[in-house]
Length: 631
Image 1 (tube, rainbow, N blue to C red):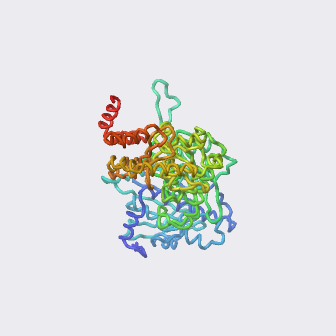
Image 2: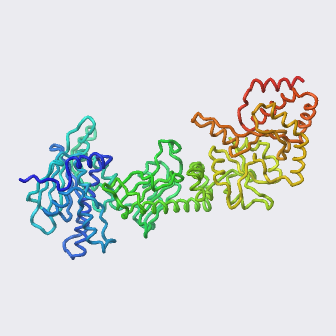
Image 3: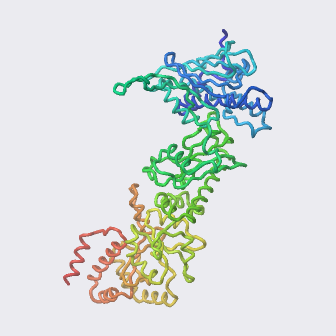
C-alpha cells in the first residue's frame, strides 16, 4: 500500500502544531466531537434542502467507546461521511477544512448553517494522545467505505474497506504512559464523561457511551448483599443549553441550580442577567452577580473572565477580554456563532466582534446594577458590601477611564443621613449656598466624626461624605467633579465657608502674627511647610492639613504599601485664632520663646494624633505633657 506524504507540511510543522497550538492535551476530544457534530450538521442540512427522506434529527448521534485491552478510544458519528477524495483533501492537507468550504459554498443560507469547525487543524490534535490514528468513513448514499491511517507526520495511507453504515469513525491508539504524561486517563470512562461535560455538553446531538454499572442482585440476602455488573448506554451531554431557552421557560430555581453547579458556589446569585443579542454582535449571554465575594477575590490568585462558547462548544474557560476589571466579580458565559477563531479554537482573533460583545456586556452589567440600586436598595447595599471596593478601584484604574460609567453606582457614608448614599442623592440635598461636595477621610466613621475640620461644616448643616477605604480619596480625586460639582476635602485650604469679611479678618490676623507664625514653623524644624491661621476650626485649637495634590490620607496609604518607598505630603499646621491656646501662645512669644517651642511641638503631636498618624517621638511627647501638668 502506497504511503502518501502530507501535501503541504512536514514532521516539524505537525510536531509544532501538536505541542504548541493546544494548551491542554484533553482538547483533542472536544475537537473530534465537534468535527463529528459538523458532519451530522452537513447531512441534516442536505436532508432539508435536497428533500432526502428517511432521515430524522432524532436519529443522529455521536458514540464514544473505550477498549482498554487494545488501548483504543473511538469517536463515531452517523453524519455525511467522506469519500477517498474528501479524505485526501481534508485529512491529507494540514489546515484544510471541509467545514469551512461547506459554509463558504452555502454562504447565501448562512443563518441556517452553524458549523463549529472552520479550520482543518482540530483533527490533528488526535496525535497529541495517539501514536496511530485510523479513520473509517462511508459517505451517505454510497456503498463504498474508506480507511485513512497515519502514525504522524511521516505520512498516511488510504484504502477501501467495509463499513456497515454511513458516517465516520475515528479510532485512536493511545500512546503509552510516560513519567510526565498519563494517557491511560483517556481510557477511563468517567474521565471521558467529565471531558464531554466540560467541553461538549451543549453539542446539539447526543454524545453516547456504554458505561459500566453495578447493581445488587435481586436474590441477594440483606446480610450479605451481592452485586453484578451490567452495561448501560448513557447520554453524556445535556444538548440544550439553558441560555438558549426562552426566559419564560425558566424559573429562578433553574438559574440558581445552574449557577451553583457550574460555578461551584453554595449560595444563590444576587442577580441573573440573561440576554440574547442579534445584529452586528450576535450572541447569548448568561451572567451572574454572586451574592458574596469569593475568599480570594481581592487577591492576585483570583482570575476574572467569562466562559466563552462557540455554538455550544467551550472555547475558553475564562476569557478575560469580555469583562472590564471593574466588573471582574461577574461570573457567567457568552455563546456566539460569529466569533473569528484562529487556527485552533483556543486562540481568538482580537477583532471587532469580540470588542463589540465586551462593550455591550459592560453596558448591560451597568444597567442591571443601576436597576438594582434604584429598585432593590437593600439588595444593592448587600452587593456593595462585597464588591463596592472593586467599583471604586475601577474609578481610579486606567487614569479614570471608567469613572463616568461607575459614578452613579458609587455609595458613600453620609454624615447627615448616617447611611450609605449615592452622589446623586447627595447633590439633590445640597444647600443653595453650597459650592462643593465635601468629603472627609479616616480609618473609621467614628474617627472621622472627631476630626476638628468637620466641625464647622456640620454646624452649618453641610453634608459630608465619609471615606474609609484606602482607595476612596484616589477615586474621588480622579473624578474631580460630579454633575459639575467639585469634590473638596474638609482639609483643603478653601472650603468656601468664610465670607469676604471673615477672609479679610483671618488675613489681617495672619499679618499681625506673621513673626510668631514663622517662629513656630522654624521651631518645628522642617516638619511643616507652613503654620497659618484658619477659620475652619470652632472648638479645637489646632489641626493638620496639607498643600499640594498629596493629602495626608494619601500619604498614609502610599507609605503602607509594600514598595519600600516613602512619600510625604506638604504639611500645614493650622491654628484657631479664636481659641484661648492661641492667646497663650501670643503671650509666650513675647515672654518665653523656649516654652513656646515646647508648645509648638506639643500642638504638632496633638494634630498628628487627631489625624490618626504616628507621633514621631512618643517619649518626648509624653515628657512634654508631664511638664505641662506640673507647672
